[in-house]
Image (cartoon, rainbow, N blue to C red; front, side):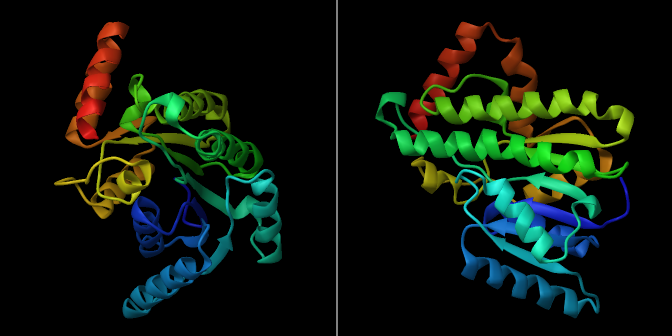
Length: 263
């Protein structure tokens, strides 16, 4: 991996994105933090700055308050980078972390939420990579936060599971396309962990799950190593091996049973 430059992180203000922003700053990266809530972005900037001051160091931090689910969001993002003096060619790490998901029967989901899930989990990931990866230098990394959901169908979270399968397939495909250019594509596939995702998706309490910072530590390790696909957590690793080897009908029914128990 190339020496730290700019790290662009989407979905930076809560859960995994927030933990990754802190860890990237402490690892020497300058930050472009993208999220919807301006006040929370500014709070995160202050938090990271205080932590860096305590370590007698500093980093450049740029904030982009943006709803990535709206059309042309990546165009707006690129303009904001230019206005804030960030050269896309100096982005050495792109972390596609923004994403949403909903729990429930497909026919009960609103059209707006389905479109938002596809926009964030599929369209923005694709457009951000298409926009920035061609200008990244040899040794740079594109890290896409997929999910253990990437490995099998997921009844009662059908759109989310399908979107994460897409993210994993895209990352693996582009890893080969960009291999000769020396740009690494890493797909991290966490199992469930403590974040705001459960409440937002309408799933029951997260319970005794690993925290976002523990998952972020594993993600940073995956970025350093540059592995193609990295299940995060024992359950995710087991399911990444077992799920695709099950008969398709069995995987569907097992996941349907498990999802019904989560409500």
